[in-house]
Structures are given as C-alpha cells and as structure tokens.
Length: 65
Image (cartoon, rainbow, N blue to C red; front, side):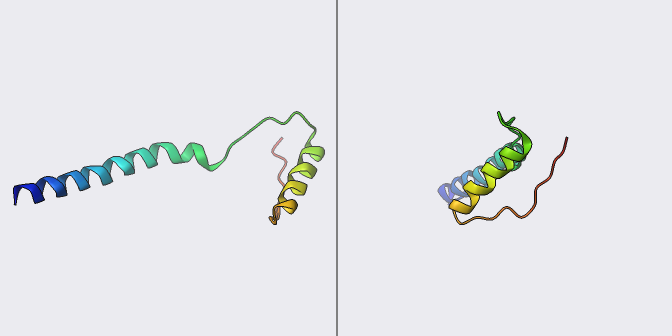
C-alpha cells in the first residue's frame, strides 16, 4: 500500500512539474521574430516559395512596421 501511495505521489508531482515547465516555455515558442537580411517583399516571396515547395500555403501576410 505504501508503494502505491509513493507511486501516485510521483505521478502527481511529474504531472505538476510538466505543467509548470510547459506553462513557462510555451509562450516563447508560439511566435518567433527574426530580423531578415532582405527587404520585406523579397522576404515574403522567399517564405511563400519555400512554403509552396513543402506543400504549405501562406494565407496572410502582415507588415507590422
């Protein structure tokens, strides 16, 4: 019985610690901002071409500047 309690405590602590790590790490993984060496139009064109070559599609383009 004592081993079962320790097992349940370990599982619960593992779930809680995983939740804390995910909560802290995920916001930084959602959107990455990277400065391009190219101009806006050229960068957009390169991204769209790379997406097309990988069977993806760029639905919207936003210029935040």
